[in-house]
Length: 151
Image (cartoon, rainbow, N blue to C red):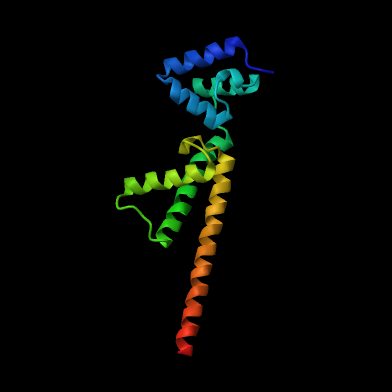
Protein backbone atom coordinates (compact mmCIF):
# COMPACT_ATOMS: atom_id res chain seq x y z
CA UNK A 1 0.00 0.00 0.00
CA UNK A 2 1.37 3.37 -0.97
CA UNK A 3 1.44 6.56 1.02
CA UNK A 4 -1.77 8.58 1.20
CA UNK A 5 -2.06 12.21 0.12
CA UNK A 6 -2.78 13.20 3.73
CA UNK A 7 0.44 11.52 4.86
CA UNK A 8 2.45 13.28 2.14
CA UNK A 9 0.99 16.64 3.15
CA UNK A 10 1.78 15.94 6.80
CA UNK A 11 5.38 14.98 5.99
CA UNK A 12 5.93 18.09 3.87
CA UNK A 13 4.34 20.29 6.55
CA UNK A 14 6.50 18.83 9.33
CA UNK A 15 9.63 19.19 7.21
CA UNK A 16 8.73 22.81 6.42
CA UNK A 17 8.05 23.60 10.10
CA UNK A 18 11.38 22.11 11.12
CA UNK A 19 13.20 24.26 8.55
CA UNK A 20 14.30 21.28 6.47
CA UNK A 21 15.08 22.14 2.86
CA UNK A 22 14.13 19.94 -0.08
CA UNK A 23 17.62 18.46 -0.54
CA UNK A 24 17.82 17.61 3.17
CA UNK A 25 14.40 15.94 2.99
CA UNK A 26 15.44 13.91 -0.04
CA UNK A 27 18.68 12.92 1.69
CA UNK A 28 16.70 11.79 4.74
CA UNK A 29 14.35 9.75 2.54
CA UNK A 30 17.27 8.11 0.72
CA UNK A 31 19.21 7.40 3.91
CA UNK A 32 16.34 6.10 6.03
CA UNK A 33 13.99 4.50 3.52
CA UNK A 34 15.94 4.11 0.27
CA UNK A 35 13.46 6.18 -1.76
CA UNK A 36 13.80 9.44 -3.68
CA UNK A 37 10.38 10.91 -3.00
CA UNK A 38 7.58 10.77 -0.43
CA UNK A 39 5.42 9.31 -3.21
CA UNK A 40 7.56 6.16 -3.11
CA UNK A 41 6.97 5.51 0.61
CA UNK A 42 4.65 2.79 1.86
CA UNK A 43 1.92 3.68 4.35
CA UNK A 44 3.88 2.18 7.23
CA UNK A 45 7.08 4.01 6.22
CA UNK A 46 5.14 7.29 5.98
CA UNK A 47 3.64 6.68 9.43
CA UNK A 48 7.11 5.96 10.84
CA UNK A 49 8.53 9.10 9.22
CA UNK A 50 5.69 11.26 10.56
CA UNK A 51 6.27 9.95 14.07
CA UNK A 52 9.99 10.56 13.71
CA UNK A 53 9.42 14.11 12.49
CA UNK A 54 7.02 14.78 15.35
CA UNK A 55 9.67 13.56 17.77
CA UNK A 56 7.27 11.10 19.39
CA UNK A 57 9.28 7.96 18.73
CA UNK A 58 12.73 6.74 19.50
CA UNK A 59 14.91 6.04 16.49
CA UNK A 60 14.91 2.46 15.24
CA UNK A 61 17.84 0.22 16.04
CA UNK A 62 19.16 0.65 12.50
CA UNK A 63 19.06 4.44 12.85
CA UNK A 64 20.76 4.31 16.24
CA UNK A 65 23.45 1.99 14.92
CA UNK A 66 24.02 4.01 11.74
CA UNK A 67 26.29 6.50 13.51
CA UNK A 68 28.26 3.67 15.09
CA UNK A 69 28.70 1.97 11.71
CA UNK A 70 29.85 5.26 10.14
CA UNK A 71 32.49 5.74 12.83
CA UNK A 72 33.70 2.14 12.55
CA UNK A 73 33.96 2.38 8.77
CA UNK A 74 35.88 5.65 8.97
CA UNK A 75 38.26 4.17 11.56
CA UNK A 76 38.87 1.08 9.42
CA UNK A 77 39.61 3.15 6.31
CA UNK A 78 41.83 5.44 8.40
CA UNK A 79 43.82 2.46 9.64
CA UNK A 80 44.43 1.28 6.08
CA UNK A 81 45.56 4.77 5.07
CA UNK A 82 47.98 4.83 8.00
CA UNK A 83 49.34 1.41 6.99
CA UNK A 84 49.86 2.71 3.45
CA UNK A 85 51.20 6.10 4.63
CA UNK A 86 48.45 7.85 2.63
CA UNK A 87 47.05 10.13 5.32
CA UNK A 88 46.29 13.74 4.45
CA UNK A 89 48.08 16.59 6.29
CA UNK A 90 45.08 17.93 8.23
CA UNK A 91 42.35 16.11 10.12
CA UNK A 92 39.61 17.79 8.05
CA UNK A 93 41.24 16.81 4.74
CA UNK A 94 41.75 13.28 6.01
CA UNK A 95 38.09 12.95 7.10
CA UNK A 96 36.86 14.13 3.71
CA UNK A 97 39.30 11.79 1.98
CA UNK A 98 38.03 8.86 4.06
CA UNK A 99 34.39 9.74 3.34
CA UNK A 100 35.15 9.95 -0.39
CA UNK A 101 36.76 6.50 -0.30
CA UNK A 102 33.70 5.08 1.50
CA UNK A 103 31.34 6.68 -1.04
CA UNK A 104 33.30 5.29 -3.99
CA UNK A 105 33.51 1.84 -2.42
CA UNK A 106 29.78 1.80 -1.65
CA UNK A 107 28.62 3.45 -4.85
CA UNK A 108 26.96 6.43 -3.14
CA UNK A 109 27.33 10.15 -3.76
CA UNK A 110 26.87 11.12 -0.10
CA UNK A 111 28.46 9.45 2.92
CA UNK A 112 25.32 10.00 5.01
CA UNK A 113 23.16 8.29 2.37
CA UNK A 114 24.89 4.93 2.83
CA UNK A 115 22.38 2.61 4.56
CA UNK A 116 23.36 0.77 7.77
CA UNK A 117 23.65 -2.68 6.16
CA UNK A 118 25.97 -1.29 3.48
CA UNK A 119 28.03 0.58 6.11
CA UNK A 120 28.47 -2.69 8.00
CA UNK A 121 29.37 -4.56 4.82
CA UNK A 122 31.96 -1.94 3.84
CA UNK A 123 33.38 -1.96 7.37
CA UNK A 124 33.86 -5.73 7.19
CA UNK A 125 35.46 -5.47 3.75
CA UNK A 126 37.92 -2.76 4.82
CA UNK A 127 38.68 -4.62 8.05
CA UNK A 128 39.48 -7.79 6.11
CA UNK A 129 41.64 -5.79 3.69
CA UNK A 130 43.49 -4.31 6.64
CA UNK A 131 44.18 -7.80 8.05
CA UNK A 132 45.33 -8.98 4.61
CA UNK A 133 47.65 -6.00 4.28
CA UNK A 134 49.20 -6.63 7.70
CA UNK A 135 49.62 -10.32 6.89
CA UNK A 136 51.26 -9.53 3.58
CA UNK A 137 53.69 -7.16 5.27
CA UNK A 138 54.70 -9.85 7.78
CA UNK A 139 55.23 -12.37 4.98
CA UNK A 140 57.27 -9.92 2.93
CA UNK A 141 59.37 -9.09 6.01
CA UNK A 142 60.08 -12.77 6.58
CA UNK A 143 61.09 -13.26 2.95
CA UNK A 144 63.42 -10.25 3.08
CA UNK A 145 65.06 -11.62 6.25
CA UNK A 146 65.53 -15.04 4.62
CA UNK A 147 67.08 -13.46 1.54
CA UNK A 148 69.38 -11.36 3.72
CA UNK A 149 70.59 -14.49 5.53
CA UNK A 150 71.27 -16.24 2.23
CA UNK A 151 73.60 -13.47 1.02
